[in-house]
Image (cartoon, rainbow, N blue to C red; front, top):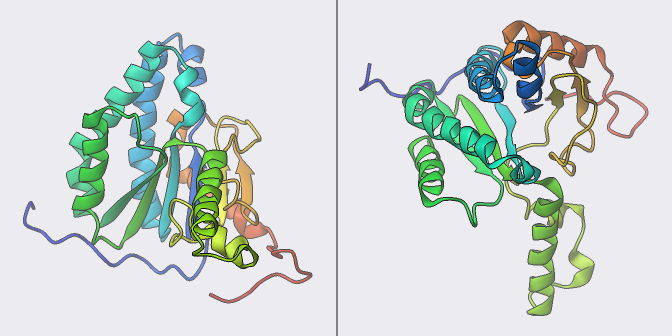
Length: 251
């Protein structure tokens, strides 16, 4: 109902990853394998995103980060970029109310300078409307590149040193981490990449230091709850040492 309060309580989260990040790859190859235009692959990719957001909430995932548009994607043909942006507009306009009703908080990381004003307005609207929701944090990496994110953090620290507000000796990993795009979000436990490619492609490189990486052969439009559960099962089989000798335990 339109007057219903957003959900704030989710299922038990004692087991499994609390933060899953996904590189949604393979829309174009999915379409090409079926003789369809790339735009149809992207459209079906949005349907997969809807399924996975719903599944993440059902599985007790607290943070879901998706790589929706990279800084390098600007090199694609203008028509394809236009299709991608059109899908983003429709996704926010059509799905934002549902996300809000379901207690999803939308966060956006990446560069907004230079984006079209209506895109910026939609991103801001999604963040503002859902700010108080707590069931699931959906972090959307849009016009995002990890190297640029780290460089921006370094610039902010350098500016503080130049202005005499920081001693260079105080700069450590924690200090830089506080100037990344979402410093309050814990690092991903699990990073999934679809379509069989095995690389991070400039995605969350700082945050991925101790993440488990799972590469699945499924193209993104075919990814669903079962595929997510399969990746989580693979994650559960691994012993996470965080650089130590024994697996880290605790909450």
